[in-house]
Length: 325
Image (cartoon, rainbow, N blue to C red; front, side):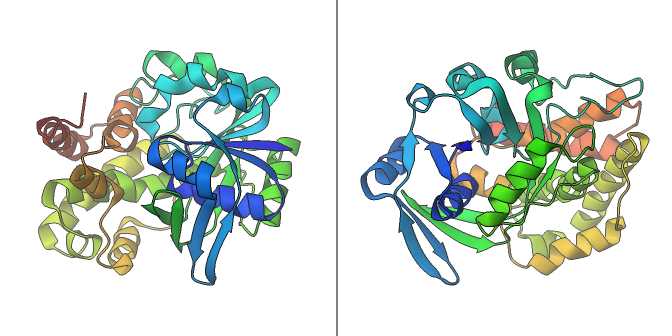
């Protein structure tokens, strides 16, 4: 089994080290100083149990790596459409694209059934780059739960979590899903195959679509924005609107809104990924986490006044920082 991780930053690098340690035939696509460090010294993973370094096959040119059985995409959502053409050398006749990207996935309406079957989302797949360039039949969904960071080029610091939930768009327990689950499990990672992966997508998105933009606008950490009465009310309003959309699409939420917000508060003084990107001058995942839900509101004819307001403010904040095109 040949596995390529495309976008081997914090999460992709963490997965790559674990797979390499288990003896998997894994390769990594990265760039810049991080790639140079991996090529020169190997990839180092710092965990609570200690530090380890593995030699890895890493390149910025997919043509060096050839066709794969699985290509696991761990880029930021907005970074994927521009590199679909570059990824083609990795894709053979039976290659599976594992979409480990935050937010509403581009394949969301593939094999969902009903009148919205095949609907395409311009916010996460402008120009249908992924739908046409990968093909939705190749996709295997993945919800990423671990937290990690690149502490320096060539070094990944694992913070918490080791679960990567997998799921077919049609909910089946396919051979390809089970085979990848087994490979990840052999590397010490949890990789359950879920029949209702979209439910998990929404529970994670529920927090991301509200906490991330509010933190970017206020610079508050999770414990503060989830307990301050004003920002908690804004987050709650956004989540209620999102829940109405999701339930129209058949999603079942295992917890209620207030418990989800309390869960965010319990994380403590955490700076969300969108706030970290803003401070670091990196493009922010506005369309995947928030614009996509606004678009789904139109698709399902669901009013989203709170989401629309926060989206407009967050877009302008990003534009003034030169971080949104």
